[in-house]
Length: 241
Ligand SMILES: [Mg+2]
Picture 1 (cartoon, rainbow, N blue to C red):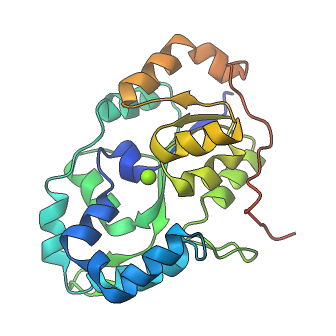
Picture 2 (cartoon, rainbow, N blue to C red):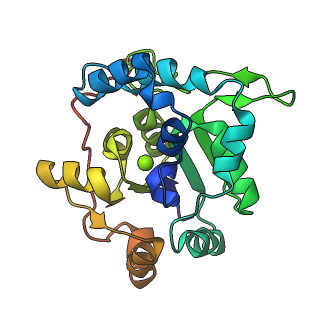
């Protein structure tokens, strides 16, 4: 049985935009003094995303209506819909793995009629009555740097015997892609991997991803596709022993 799985980031990857950033900027959260402070610390890598999320996301409480208005005008990245259909045809499970907020991921996927096998993100949401609920996904007892510990999720899939194709664009994907077999990267993830000398497939749209996958599908399935990675564990990641 082929055990090949797709893990894709959401913001700036499956989506054309970084939805979390748009919410924070359009609703003025990123201009709040506490958020300005943690954003500086985050950029200097003095804190991880978990601490940033704990400061910024609770400021979206009581803003469901404003959030929903913004969610109505974001778009999937070009080719994303065909890509999800291709995975379904090939019986390849897709996991959306995000350090963002589950509420907007689920809302957007429902609006766009996109279904995937698994959605993993920070359990931050509005309940039926509009009440705000906060949480982070991270269950890694050895490291609380990120809100969602993407590396743990991918490591687990590897341990279950899956070959992983990872698609991402940002710093959380640098950790997340650590245990992947192949990486498709754009934006800052592509820069990090280039600096590190790690092989990857560059992409801008999901048409680029599909071009590579369709032309070499048998090689991905049997494991011989080029640019395959082995055991690249980001130095910053820690796991329980
Ligand atoms: Mg992203």
